[in-house]
Image (tube, rainbow, N blue to C red; front, top):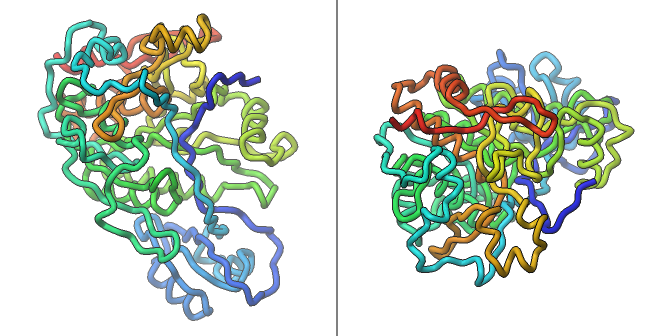
Length: 454
C-alpha cells in the first residue's frame, strides 16, 4: 500500500508509558520505573511523601502537570490500589528511544557550498507569499519562538544569529546527568527547522530575524518523553509566543489491551499542551510523514503494525497521531509545489488544520531517480534547507512545513499585538489562509503569509 523510492521517515519520539495489567500483582525484588499521573487537584508534594513512606523512590517530577517518575518493586496495579484517591493513572516508564529524522538526500550533487542565489531556489518561500519577490520584511523582534528539537549549529550565522538561548534536556544514558553545555545540533534537524523560521541572509526564512529559544531534546537522534515534556513546560514558562513541535508518534488510546494501550501517555501530553496554552503559547505540531488518512483507523492500524511489529488490526481502541491530534494544537500537514497534499504527508478531514509547503515527489515519479538526480529535478520537488557544517542541502517532510506556520503565527502576533492571546492569533491565521482541495475534493487551508507582512 505504501510504495517508497526512498525511506520515508517520521519524527517519532518514544515516550515512556506502557500500561500494565489491571490485576493486582505480587511484590517482587526487581525494581521497575513508573510514571505516576496524579490527580490535578492533588498536592504533588504530599503525594511524594506518601510514596516515600511506602518505600517507593521518587526519581523525577514535573510539578506543573502533576507527574512523577518513581522506582519500586511494586507493580503498577499495586501502586494504583495503594494511592487510588490521589492518582489518575500509573504507567511503566519505557527506556527505549527513537530517532527524529527528516528525509535528506546527501551527496555532492545536493550540497550548495558557495552559491549565494538561494532565493532563486526557495520556491517554497516564494509560493508562501504568492510572489517571486524576495522577502524584504523583517521581524520586529517582539515575538519569541520556542523550538523543541535537536539543538542548533554554530557554524552558520545566518541560521543561529537570532537564537537567543539554548537549553539542553537530554541526559547521559548511563549517569542520567544533564550537560548544560551540550547544545550543538548533531543531526541537522533543529538547524533546518530554525532556518525555515528566522534565517536572515542569502537564505531566507518566513520571518527573518525572529527570536528563537531552542530546547534540545534530541541527542544524535535520540529522545525520551520526559525531555520533551519538560521542554514544553519550560518553553511556556519562558513566555515564548509559539512552540514548534516537528515531532510525533502514533499512540493507542482507550484500549483494553494492557500491553499496547497508551491512554496515560496521551493524557500526560495533553496536560503539557494545556499548560502551555494557558500560559499564552500557541502550540504547533507536525503530522506524520507516512501518507496515511488519519480518519481511516483500518489504514492507520495497518501502517503502525508495519512500523512497529504488533498487529493492531485485532486490537480495540483508537490510534492517534500525537501530539498533532491533541486539543489546543495547530496541526500542520505538507503540500507540494502544485498545492496538492504531499504524497508522504498524513491527512484527514477535521484533523489537519492547515497545510504548508514541505516538498513532494511528482518529478521523481514522472522521470525516475536517475534523471531526477542528473537533471536536478529534486530542486522542483524538495526544499533547500540549511544543514550542518554551514552547508545547504535538499529534503522534505512535515518538519519543513510546520515551522513555516510557526513563523506566520509569530508575524501575526507581532502585527496585531496578540501576545498571550493564542485563539485570536490562530483565528487570523486560518481566516487569511488560501483554499485548496484534498484528494477527495474536501476543502483544506493552505498557508499564505501575504496579509501578515503588509
